Image (cartoon, rainbow, N blue to C red):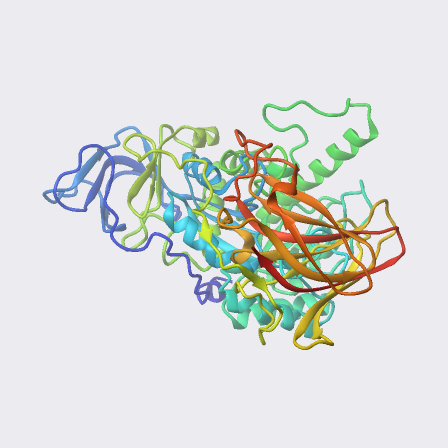
Length: 597
C-alpha cells in the first residue's frame, strides 16, 4: 500500500509560496523558530524536546539546541506539545455545525485540523470553491468526486452532475472520465453500500465488478478512492477491490477473519468515523430511553463498530481519521478531536490515534511526502497543544496555536477569524441560455442540471436540446413522477459556476423566457438567503413570459440576520423551473431564450 500511495499526485497547494508569519511582533525575515516544544513527529519516534525551524512555509531543521538564525520570529513552546496538523478524510462542507465555508474553516483551524477531504460538492463547483478557499484562512481542502448507484446512497438527493451513477465496469470508467477534467483530489464518497442501518429501507449497493473497475481506473489517474461502506460483507468486497480508505465503521455484525484478511491484503486503510455514530454525542442527550428497541439497536451497532475497529487495528490494518463532519451532532473541527478520543475508547493506544489523524491519513491521500509528519522539507502544518496527548488523548482539545504553511492561523497572534460572508457577487450577462451552444453549456458557461424530488423513490427526469420548429434550438424536459405526495421535477440554471458565487442582479428587473408545457410551473430564484418564487402557466403553444422580481415571494431558510421580506437581488445563485404533478403521471416543459431583463 505504501508504494502505491506514494504515487498519488494530489493537488492541494491552496497556500503555496512564502507567507509572512503573523504571530507576535515580526522582525525582518520570514523564518520562524518554535523553541523547546516536546515534538511528537508522527514517525514512530518517541516524543522529544526539540526546536523546529521554518522558512517559507517549510520545515528546515528539527533538533535540540539549534542555532536560531537572525531575524527569525521565536515562539517559546517549553512545556507544550508540537504535532503535525490533523487530517479529517470525511467531511461535508455544507449546512451543518457550522454551515458556511468561512465558519467551517474557522472551526477546523481552531481544532488544529489543517487538511480535510470534502465529499459534498458538485465537480462544477470545484473551481469556484478553490478560489474562495484561497481567499480566506482555511485548511487545505481536497475536493472529491462522488459516485453511487441508481437509487443508491447519495444518489437519492443529488443531481447526476454531483453524484455519478455506476452500474457496470463501463459505467465506472465513464463516471471517472466525467469527473476527472474538474481536477478532483480523490474519488469519494463512493457509495458502495446501500444498508441503511436497519432503520430505513435499504438503498442499492454497487456490484463487485463495478467497484473493482472504478478503483482500478482511479488508480490509473493516481487518485485514491474512499468509500461509504458500513457492512462487513461490503467491507470484504472493498478490500478485494483495493479501495484506499474504507470509510465508516462496519457495524452490522462482528467482523470475521476472512474479511480482515481481504482488507489487509487489499492494502486498504480504515476510517471508522466513530464520531458520527456515537450513540450519545457530547453535549447531547439520548433521544430514546434505554428500554426502547431503537436505543438498543443503536448500542448493538456501536459495539460492533468499536469491536471491529479494534480487530482491524490489531491485525495491522492502518487506521486513518474521518468523521462525517457536517452531519447532525458532528461539528467540524471538534468532531476530528472527538474521533481520536473514540479511537482510544475503542482500544487503540493514544499514539496510534494521533498517527491515524496525521501520518496515516497523509499517507493514504498520497500527501506524506508533503505533510503529516514533522520532518525536514515537510510543509509546516503544525499544532501546538498544552498537554501530552500521546499519554492523555483528551489533551488534543487543549489547542494553543495552529500553523498552516508556517503561518499561525489560530491562537495567539493569529489574524482575525473569517467573517461569515459569501463569495463576492458576480455581475452576469442578461442572456442566461438560448440553447445554441454546441457544448451544451449555458450562455453563462454554467452546467444546466435536473433536480427531481429526493428520496429512495425519485421522479425520473431527462433534459435534452432539440431543434425548434421556428428555427434554433430549445430545451425539452420530460419526467415521470414518483409515487409520493407532491412529487416534483425541475430544471436549474446556475448563474455562476457550481452555484457558489452569488450573482448581482440589481441591474435587472426580472426574468423573461419563452415556454410551452402541460400546466402550471413555479419559477424560483434560489440564493444564499433562501429562495424567491412565483407561479407561471404553461400551455400547448409557445408564449413569452416575464416575471418581475417584485412579484416574487420569499420561501425557505435564510442566513442569520438576513431580511426575508425585501428582495435585494445581490444574493441569487440560480434560476429554477419546477413542475409539481400527481404521483405516477408524466410531465414536460420546453424552454427557450431564458433572459434577465
